Image 1 (cartoon, rainbow, N blue to C red):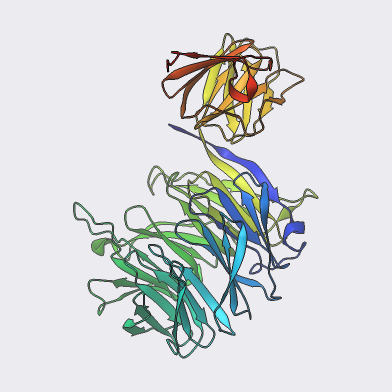
Image 2: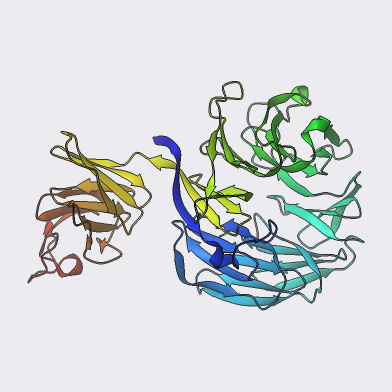
Length: 498
C-alpha cells in the first residue's frame, strides 16, 4: 500500500551546474531514464550532468559538449542505456552510454538538426533538420539511412508508435507517417504546423483491448487533430473555447482520456470515446498569467500544472467530479525568493515530481512513499524520505531521531541502538542514537549472496535471513576466526555440510 503525502523537497540542482542564473525557458532541459535510476540535465553552458534519483552527481557523469549552441533535445532510448544529445547547429549527436560512462559521437552529416526521437520499441533513432531532411540511425548495427526531402521545411516534432511507425510534423503544414526504413506510408495536409504529436490507445467502450495504439493526436496550437489509425481518411479536429488560449501541451492518460494545458492557464480533460467527444470532463484555471507545461503521474493519478505562481498538483484519483483544491508547490531559491517554472515531469515510477525553473535550477519533490516501518520495544522506525529513517518513542517525551541512509531501503529493521536498511541482497547498518547516526561497515552495505527476506537486531547482533539461511553476526565487532560479511564474527544456520 502507498501512503500519499504532501510534496516533500528531495533535491535542488543549483543554477551553477547549468550555466548560472537567467537561463531561458528553452535552454534548461531534463530527462528521466526509463528505469528511473538516473536524471539528465543540461543548461546554457552545454554541459550535460547525470544525477541519481536523489539528486547526487554520479561518477563520470558530466558530458562536455563541443558545440556552442543550446541543446534542443535530450532523450534516453527505450532500454535506458543510451542518452542522445542534439545541439543546435551541430551535426554531431552525442550518444552517452550508461555502462561505459562515455560518449560516442554520431556524425549525421546534417548541418541544421531540429528534431530527435528514439523509437519506443526498437534501436532506431530519428533525426530531422530545418530543411526537412531525415536520418534514421540503427544503434544495433550502426547503420545510417538518410532520407532527403522528407519535408520541404523544418521538421518540428514527431513520435514513434510501438509498431515502429514514425510520424513527423513540419512547418510546411504536412504530416508524414513512415516505416523504420524511412519509406513514406501516408502524408496529410494540416491547417497549421504541428507542435507536438503522440500515438496512444483511444477509448472504445469495448470489453478487452489490445496494447497497440489506436490513435495519433496532433497539437496544432489552435486545435487538436485526432486520427483514428483504422480510419485515417476521417480525422477529427477538436477546437476549444477561445478564452483558453493556445494548446501548450497535451498528453493521453488512463482509459483514453486526453489532458490539455492552455496558454491562458486552463487545464482541460476530454474523452476519446466517440459519444463523449466534444464534452469537457474537467476544466479549471490554475494560472492567471501563463501556463508553461503539464505532466501526469499514472501511478498516483496526479497532474502537475506549471506556470505563474508555481506548480499546481491536481488529484484525479477519485474521478473528475471529486477534484479538491490542488496542492501548490512553489520553487524556493537560495535567497528565499521564488523561482518561475519552465518545465515539469515525473520520474517513471511516479514518485518524484521534477520541475525546472527559469533561474536555471531543477527541483525534485517526493510525492509518494511506501509505508515502510519497524519496531523495537517502545520505539518505532519509519521511512520518512527515500534515504532517511525517523525513529520515535511512542511513550513521548523524546525528540525524533533522523537517520540518513546510504541505500534507498525497500524495508528496514530496528534494534536497540541500530537500524538496518535492506535493499535486495544488501543491508546497511546505522547507529541510531540521539548524537550518533553514523553508518557502520561497508559504505554500500553488507552483501548476503541473495535476496534478504528478513533482518532482526538486538543491541549487539544481527540475524539476516537470505537464500534459505540465517547469518548471525555482530553488528560492529570485527575480530573473528570465521568470517562473515566484512570480516565479522558469523555463524550460519542451518550449517551446510560439504
